[in-house]
Length: 318
Ligand code: 0CN
Ligand code: SF4
Image (cartoon, rainbow, N blue to C red; front, side):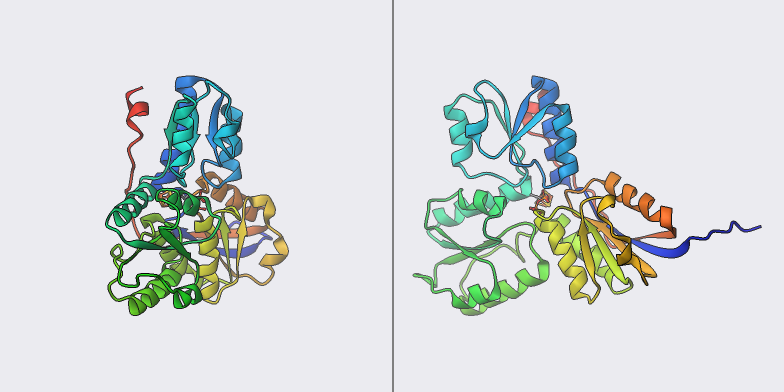
């Protein structure tokens, strides 16, 4: 006899890749290793990655989160978050004699080095990113003031009036929308044909793969749920990508955020997670859905990821 159920069927398309990227994995491991080596407390400047569950779990293990190095007591080690910091931050930590460990994602550090290189070559940098995001603040802080101009939108790119239009470079934040960024770089290249830039842009592999993966499921879904935080740039972009495919999408931090009225009339639900959201929260959400629905889960994989980043040498040796 087939098993009977009074729960409504729900087809669940789970995007892959989703969730943790190599930079997030490395940043969290750095805090854990620092706690093992130094003992508690280890201070962390800014949320190590933009996820409350990750931050709360590390707090339980002895991490203390602050927004500036000024809030780190003397003699205590401090970790800088995955998003990167302005140069002034390690300088200040060194001045105070603090042990610091930099958990900046290597792909963000790569943009930092490019920024320095372009300024050394005498070019003015047009930086595509979101004002106020810690990665943008960190990248601006790699070069002297006035060497970089922020562009957030196509309209900004059209309105730019640089002093030396033939002496420009562009760089981007790593977690932007691939499509929006292409539209902006197209404008820059049309208006300033000699502008120097990375091949494509600096959007990281994880950001573009997750956008591609949600695109692959969105048009088959009645609703897409994205697990991620409201301050997580890459997660918010996933909601936008689904919406642009014409499918409503919601950002949720955890299973408890779900309002089941959202699922009225939904036959196929899409699910993905931003680069800072642990897989455990995906499983928690599927379990919650299974309380109400007869969930038929399918994973739709649009790329394979094998990226792993080395830990800083100081931690690897320890
Ligand atoms: O959510 P995150 O902590 O950061 P953003 O997407 O807001 O940049 O994910 C890790 C990404 C990095 C750096
Ligand atoms: Fe690095 Fe990209 Fe992950 Fe950010 S989202 S930590 S840039 S791999």
